[in-house]
Length: 130
Image (cartoon, rainbow, N blue to C red; front, side):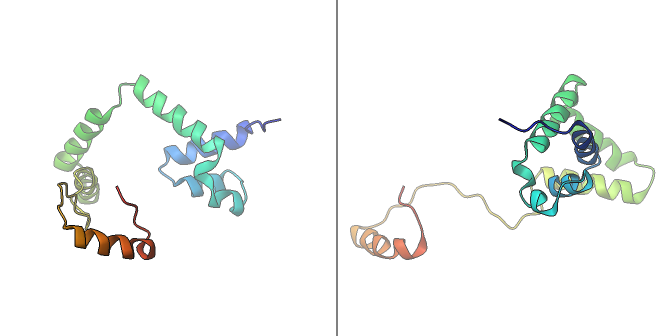
């Protein structure tokens, strides 16, 4: 028998997620235990709330374009500097400007001897061969 979601806790989780709280913090604020919060991303109440929020935003026409347009407007015309700074920050995050990760694509050719050397150390490095 599957457990049903407590509607009061669900409403609290949904409100916390709408306020921008993490899944873990939303679950704690709703009254779930710390142990439940550790695995909040697995809880059906969180999945259900996030799906409802996404459907609601879609129904209201709030999509990626609308969000970016709103952030641009706030960044350029916001009433105070902290709001403008936050908007610029989110736009930078959207463009992945603040990351140390580098995406690289291509092919690599190695000699048979290099392949054998790689195969001999692969088990110690936990690298799969693709």
